[in-house]
Length: 261
Image 1 (cartoon, one colour):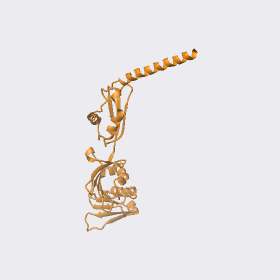
Image 2: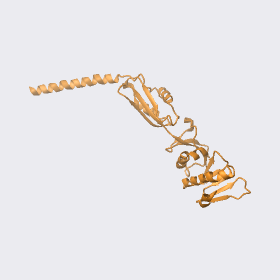
Image 3: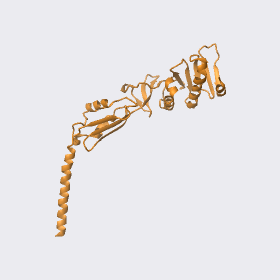
Image 4: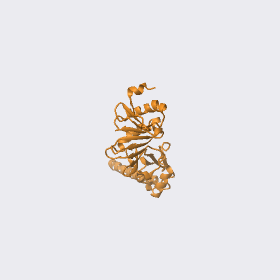
């Protein structure tokens, strides 16, 4: 008899739990999303896309959760839809217990714009990913032109670009990086008519420091437009070619440069 009572008790308890789950589960599914929050977490640093742009994009895809019940909201579908936007790096969409939906995104960081000799143009972000030009507007990034290919790709230029943009003087001075048919690197400055010839990317940091020494020690003495080319292609030498070709090239070594007054 006791065994039968235990079985009946378990059956009643199980029936209660199932009924409660169904009733409360349905009630939870009936909660309506009152608010849909979108945040672009790095909007202070970049403005490739805004929260309003994302509201409009999701609305056109008929995925806006606002006013829908929890059972009719698919946060995974919202997330997948937004991931298709090439400008975004990270996307997360989730729903709180009160029905509110949150979408958090971060933007890609374009660090250069490329124009190849074949007429192709695109941006490159800090992860080396290509981004279509017509998908964004970027106020300023260094321009890379010329023979950008498998021998010297845009991705190979990222360390140099990051060095330039992370340096106060070079960030203001360098506007264009040209790649020659021989895959040598030329820098075009904002001020002055000279071209800065790096040659290969090998030891680019030392080469940039040598060029900076010229700008700090020599240019103030001779003027901004005396030289048409300043080359640091060769180890421990800086070759300055004058605009006026009746003068011989000036070749600076580290020793000479350090003693120049």
